[in-house]
Length: 216
Image (cartoon, rainbow, N blue to C red; front, side, top):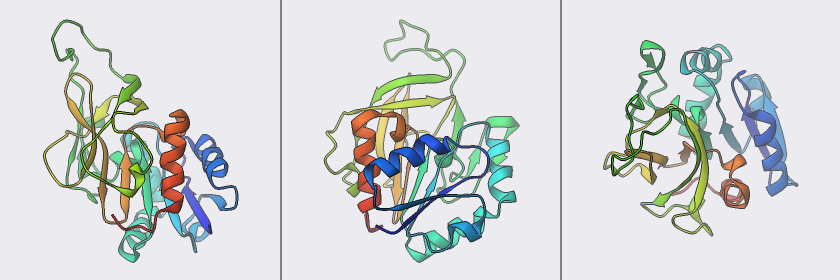
């Protein structure tokens, strides 16, 4: 199974992610990498993230992970981003008065409106969005293998990527408005939800990741 590097830039749900990976791939070497050198030789990279985008971007860049990630993507290494680990791969975030991100995906990251309502407009929704939501798989992907369309995953976030109509959206969910639950391009797959907190369904997605060859 080889080496899986979980990038530790000071802003992640690292231990629960590592524990979940160890559970689905006990034969793999799971490394919490604090430097690019510690991630060298990894056959897969996982980018977690919890917190404000300014601190996350600063920590990621200061750790030297930006060139590591881009080189890994160019080399075809399978990459998984989770929550803020997804958002830092977008073009720009509205959080913290606007922060430029890594621009791996061209989409923006938006703030949920303070007057966010249910689809029927009968109930005001709380921000941050916390809880279980059904995810609609809008296109086939190896990371969806064995996961029923409409399965529930666990979300915790105040900012979101709009579910625009493009080929990179792999899954959608609804929280007052449609948003991207997952995106994929080539050897990169990112999720707004937390698979490590999503019970057996999330573990199946992580297992799919550790078995994935990076081809969509």
